[in-house]
Image (cartoon, rainbow, N blue to C red):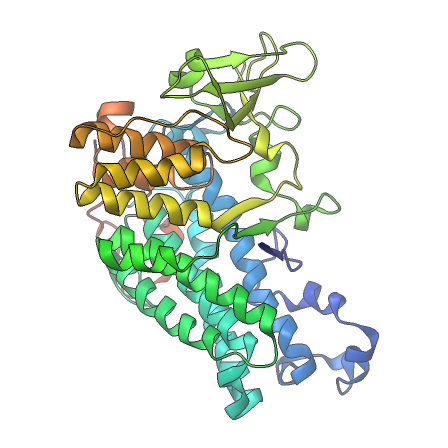
Length: 449
C-alpha cells in the first residue's frame, strides 16, 4: 500500500504561504465557474467548499517542497553525503563548519524558512477549513490533512536544526521541545483522521501517517514504549512518498537534480565509504552497490549507487558516486513507511536489552523479497546491538534524511566524521533577523563534536 502526494505548484522563487497563483490552475473548469468573479480572485474567494481542497493541498505541497531541500542539507551534514559542488555554503555544511548565528543565510536557512512557512500555511488552512465547513470540519479529511502537515513540520525542524521557534514570533526552543510539540500535534491529527467519514481511503491514509509520524516523534523524544506501540499500528507494506515530476522546475526534485551523475553531481557518497563500494559496470550503466555491513561479500541493494570510472564531482576534486534511488528529478522521496516503523520496534527492543527481538525485527527487513540478505546473528552485547541497529537504519533509510539525527542522538559525529563539526544545523539567520523575539548572537547551539 503506497500513498503519495504531489507538489502543488510551488516554485523555488515565489513561495507564498498557500501558493494560490499556481494552484488555481489545477482547479477544474466547473470549480472556476463556481467562484464569484474569478478575475477578482482574492482571499474571500477561498472561502468556498470547492476550492478548499486546493488550499489544503497547497499546504501539503509546501511541505513536500521543504522536505526535498531538507534532505539535501541534512544529508550533507551527515556522513552519507559530501559536497562535490563549487558552492561555499554547501562546503560549509558538508565539512561541519556552520555555527550558531551564522553570519549569512546559507543553504541551511532556506529549508528551515520553508518549513516555518509550511507550518503557518497548515495552521491558516485549518482555520479556513473550520470556518467554511463549520461542524462538518470535524469529520473532514481536509482537517486531518492540514493537522498532519503541521505536525510533520515540527518533526522535521527538530530532526534537522538544533533550535527553532515553536510558534510565529516566539523565542528559540530546543529540538527536544519540537519533538514534544510534534507528539501533541500528531495526537490531534490522529484523532481527526480516525473521525473521517465518507472517505475510507483518506481515513486509512491519514491514520497511517499520524501513527508513523508519532512513532518517530516518540522515539526521538525518548518515549520508547509509546514509539513501539505506534509503530505496531502502521500497516504492513505501507509507505508515504513525496512525488516529483520532470515537466517543470516547480515540480522537480532538488535531491534528484544534485545527487546523481545524470544531473549536476553536486553531492555524492562521502569518501569515507567509497572503498566499500562494489562497482559492477563502470563504463555504461555505472551500476554499483555498497557492500553489506554484516556479509561484506554481498552487495546491499538498499544502497545502490552509480559510478563511472574516474568521474569526479563538479568540483573536480572528489570521486563521484551518485545515489541511484534519485536517478532523476522525478524520483520520489520516501517520508514514512512500515520499514521505518519496524526499525523503531527494533530500536525499542534493543534499548530494553531484548537483542533476540531486535534481530528478529531487523532480519524481517533483511530477508524480504528484493533485499535477500542473510540474517544477522543475535547480538551478544549492547555495543553489537547498537552497531546492528545503526547499520540497518543507514541501509534502509539511505539518503532519506534520517542519518544526521541518528549520528547526533547516538553521539557519533566525532567518532565517524571527526571533531570540531556542528552536530546539527543552526537556526536560520533569516528567522533571527525577522523574529522580534530573537536577537543576533543569542544562539547556544548546535553542539560541536
